[in-house]
Image (cartoon, rainbow, N blue to C red; front, top):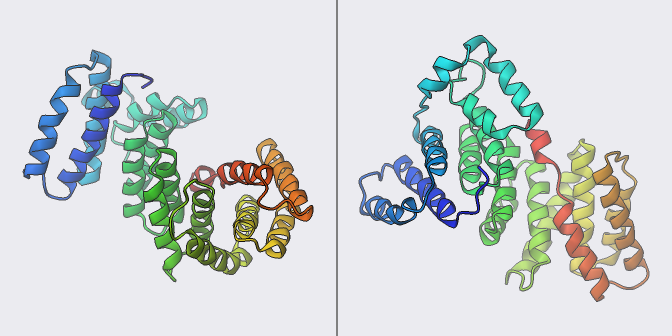
Length: 310
């Protein structure tokens, strides 16, 4: 729900933490007891609508510890045969609150557990409720570890939530693992690229950039999706520029702009990549203007993993 109430966000964050503790078998721990006590303060500043929304979220979060709790009111009200079509229509309208409500009617007949977790993550993310969105995306990744888009989206949501260090740590972990699938390597590279543009950047960023470049160069020939290739080559170019390897930077950026992108968003990114390439060729690498453009590009040259995961 849309609210500017900081107490709502605080309570929501602690609610997610509490369900994580329950999932770990620590519901009766001293940590859980302290967290419940801490939740009492923000609870006193919540409106009725906010409490209703948070109670519904608590029911949703039960899936993280193996309990899918159907909402009896929704089950009784919505004709069961209509559920799949109603969910599709809500998605097409981008009515995320409606989708969340419909998912509480026990949709396990049509959707696998990881798909339900993913859809909840998507809804909460679109509502800018990132703490539960991250929890549900992590649940989707645990339920279906083979779906690399879930892992990639978890990093993206962490970054969007301002958890830059955690997103960076996970990206480093994926890149260090020889078994990481090629597509996840490319997605992790975009996190390293954005981290490299931060001021200050992580202390080991040069090593992380070198590792990301090496793994991305190995992964790119095996990718077929144009959007991923576009972001992959663009990111590789930015990483190479970051460490002063102008030849590699030019070659990668040139590969990116030669790809047949068609959407308005990608065409606008392509125009910025052309500007970056021209600055590098003009010897303006590391100039204030080039660094500003590189930061802008690193933030927007991210594949649409939602589209890939759908």
